[in-house]
Image (cartoon, rainbow, N blue to C red; front, side, top):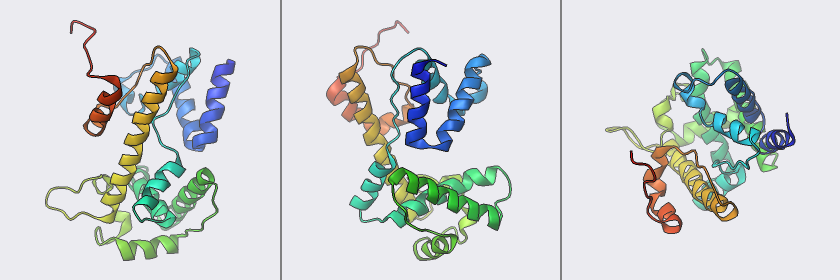
Length: 225
């Protein structure tokens, strides 16, 4: 491992903790095993990040910091407890894909999420499973039970024919934080480097197109296809 790789890994861990450690380990396995993009499409972001760092390139992340995301929540009148609750709810569908989400596993999930976000924020705010249950009963009318939260419930938009919930609203704020940070990060990279490769989810263009065009101009095709 060269100096660039070590610094990249250390920086990702400082910023994003254990989840990034797992992604980096996965990325290294991808690179070593002649990465199969079709079979691992959900993790393609980690592969180019590791590959770029291994080549000595500076790597930027589009993910906003926890403090930047919380600042957007607070600017709209929401609290750190709302922030914690959002991330707990956002993780429930993922946890259920790993198996039955028991009461004990849910308690571990709450402790893990709250501890992780406190670490990123530099705070020590308590938020227990009882606090979360009380928050859910007060703020969420549907689904009736929080363990019934599904992936579509965490979307920024409600499904056709269904009511909009506070979780949809908080998801929209989180998406806004990401979109604003992605645009700012691309702008910073372009200002600091003569050549920039952006690995980008096309769906973000729905929200960011106008801002990107303002400082980059209209895109031009450079290939005949």
